Length: 175
Image 1 (cartoon, one colour):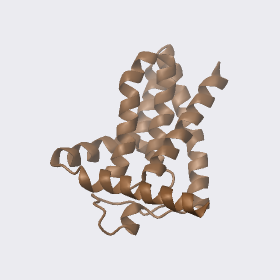
Image 2: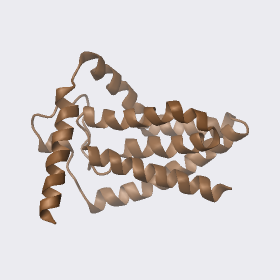
Image 3: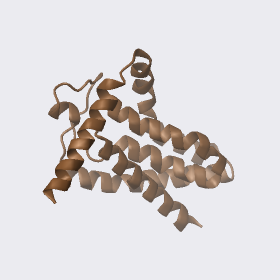
């Protein structure tokens, strides 16, 4: 089993270094530094709350579902971060490129990726055409976390699974 784990860690580290160091570009620095905030608490709560309070019909329902999914999704994130304290990549790999105010809490799983996936799924369930825009946007937020040196790919992958599962469960139990 340790051979498999070592193989996975090796390849994940290679993927992390590729995204964090090999594709660096001035435009991407600014783009990812800004888009990453769409997965933050302020943006996800404000977007969901505005839709829940001011939306009508399917938009309002999706906003309420997004708030519920966002809340539910962060329970397992908090538990996993405490149970499996993984250091952030920039603390393990000195050559990691980081940006302003690097985080100091644990890396696994990515809360930003969890949050963005937990709020987009109810909107896609309500209006499937939005998936064309929202799914790539959520993947880009996850990628930004790696690019900025804050998460490993598996942090973002697991975050996307947790957020999606919380949202799908909320939507399924809703109706």
